[in-house]
Length: 331
Ligand SMILES: [Zn+2]
Ligand SMILES: [Zn+2]
Image (tube, rainbow, N blue to C red; front, side, top):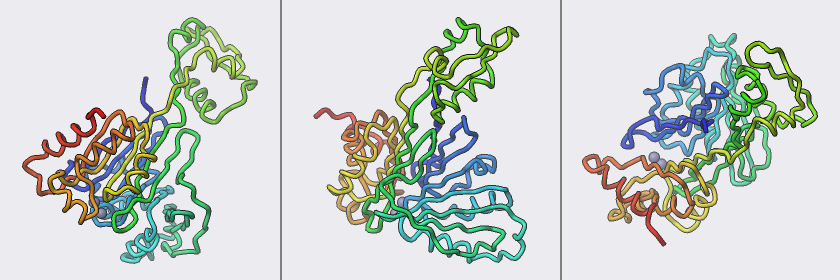
């Protein structure tokens, strides 16, 4: 099965947290957190369409300028999602520069400020000098982004300030059966892209679909429903969750387990060792053991821990070991 989403951590676990998820099918990428992103090259940054910011502590937001500098003179919309306060933080960043030469630029930044019950969207347009217009408010019930291929949900966690955790879920996964294609004498080619696109879009079964025969045998007409039955297998979509900076308490635990349940991969902060859990709790962070326990309770298939405190620079294996032991423990 070819995965749709290709996630990787941008930095080492001791550097700023951040997750880059490429969606190769769509030639685009999603970015989770905006700390130091200088290791991403410009072609990677130009693929970014949506940025999910957990909160605006510097290690999660200092890369704003780096991203803006790269995308600014492109005909592009970047959507950014973050907790209460993000619109003011973005505006503050934008007001730090002079915009008298951007009248012809085509870049727009849309900021979605996610409150527990509403989302406020504000468009900052380069050609307008990034002036702050009025926001548009809509109700929020857990989902921040809904597309044909995937959805992104989020939860407000307690980090002494609200910190957003995110879960990206592919709606369903499409596998094309090559043997069936061969049996029907159909060729592999760009038409399969259109076919998959129609599946994502939920095209009606009676729609006619032209499929090219192999070895130049001409085209054959199928109904979309017939083709779907013959060559496609639909399986459960991938799920990737991202949880950083949150204290371990009952409410956070419930929210994280609910959001990240059945993730294929859970990326979770593990700032401290459990022997330092009082410190972790004072600083509103998770320990490695807590991260492992959360991943186990959420029934995640894989756990990746990161965002380690520099105090463990000489023994990162202890953080890994502790998290994995709690993750794999039997009840
Ligand atoms: Zn942090
Ligand atoms: Zn923080």
